[in-house]
Picture (spheres, rainbow, N blue to C red):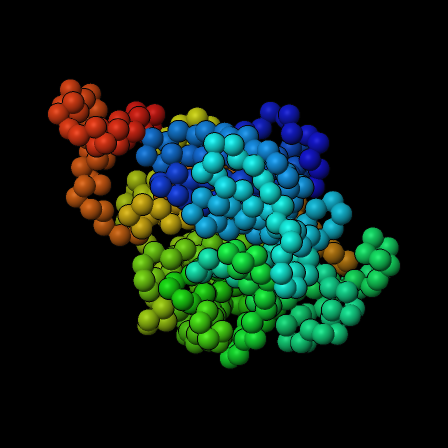
Length: 419
């Protein structure tokens, strides 16, 4: 990727393969790439974008400190307002560096995480992370190991795809491939560990989706399979379970999709790149108790809401093409909403006799999709009604407590910008 063309006239919000999270109903977005003049351009590491989901206003914040290099395929995870970035691919190759930043501080300053205990995982990208009890638990990905590291790795945990000689790494042979390792970073003690897992583990993979429910981490997709698979790791006993699902009711196999917990036993899966070669727009719910998939049929023309505009979020009509999405993020929002941001609407794969290529797509997104997964509370419904009728009810705002006034003023701003 080329990071030199950042002054091109493209919206700074358009991006794919970024990281995002929600805290106090504010969406935080960092990193990723967009396409400029047909080339992938990595977005700046010294800025982060915040979107107030009540008012729809975007804000850009500058970042200082140990700025991470230009990265693709990194994994972002947050504990409250502290963001961690681990791994990815940079100009020098695959990375095993970790960076952190506390976004609650007035000055957002990156810190490179050093002086850690334990063995740092091998360099990788396209991996995932669960956050559990102050620990960052990483799974899978694609990267490189030295020949010595490979000899000490179980063959079931690493699928070798390529070997190369590298002078950049002390003139050793690098072995590149997919892994199914579980690596744990304890943020309180700054200690890396690799627990010994048991049970029916998933095959080595990357570009998969992951989600956490209670003390169980779930993994789906990221492999060439006709139907989407599902695995569960108990984070107390480190035992893997493969969830048996009837192929007649399973979604199409896919990669680069998202999976979001919406209740104590429900996962919401959206989009991705199908094993049939299509970029997908379907949404499914998985019940972890019954182990059943349910395809979501949307009876409402105004949901999901599509929110787009560089300064405000605007309500827009939705069609199926707009909902096609890959390389996006999906976060759990207020009232169990699933908040999808960015991504691409058109991933194209070109195959010849030697290589498979991903063509850069001009259809990168800057919009936010909000999927309502359950009925709203009476309070939420009243807020939206007042927001949609601001001219009629604005004079009565002064009768309300100041905190509620501020909330309703944001909702009025939101629906005013949407009209």
